[in-house]
Length: 155
Image (cartoon, rainbow, N blue to C red):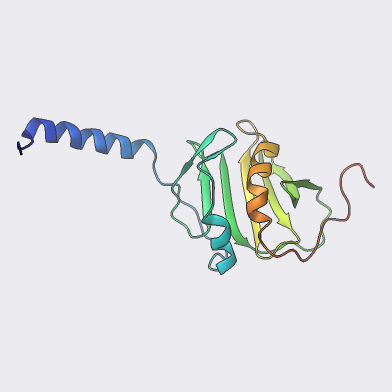
């Protein structure tokens, strides 16, 4: 078997380094209950693409990120919400409480699921409907212990 030439190895090494540099790891903080085994049931099946954004590696347990820079971030194990005056919507079979206080970045927290899941996204880059319809069925695997009673337009 012929031995690789040193120049060829240098080129291959530079190419590998360049490719790994393109998709850096997203640094996140794990949620308080990220070690809940039910979070593994969600994050083990995260899709490669969400709303046209490619998945990236994260450095925190029970998290997922998509886009470069990250435009969608999922965190499992956040504290479940109690009663709230924030609006609630259903998508992907899950009730989501919508926090737009950091618009155009929106925070969607699953309601009536334990552990709770939070999806943080950049509305200027992705549609919440696309992201939540795809991620909802994964979150829907979590035990349901409640549902939103008031929704926009129903009061």
